[in-house]
Length: 150
Ligand code: ZN
Image (tube, rainbow, N blue to C red):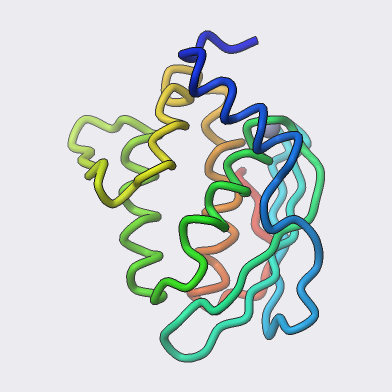
């Protein structure tokens, strides 16, 4: 197990066992696949969005607890948001997780996503936590290729 704080660990386990927005979305106007070969995590994202707003998002796939919990938390965090807001959240999340020296993140923007902060102490797990986000970014950037974390 990971040495995360107990409460955070419980939330991650909960999201892994009962992922939110899990399944296919019939009304999606875009889908994208992501793959993390290091861990074997696979994800398919379904998004219904218009020019500015992400109306609904669902995900489907299999992977480790961190990848599933992160995808579940992501869908909750960006559903109903403007695309531009989603990108701000993505950047804050990436900064928190990768802990680069110049990185900055705003807990108010991240909300529940801060639960995953402990992942930054486990480099091998960072790609698990960011897989769903990189897949999302490629969709919003209009890139149709399968995303891989390699
Ligand atoms: Zn993983």
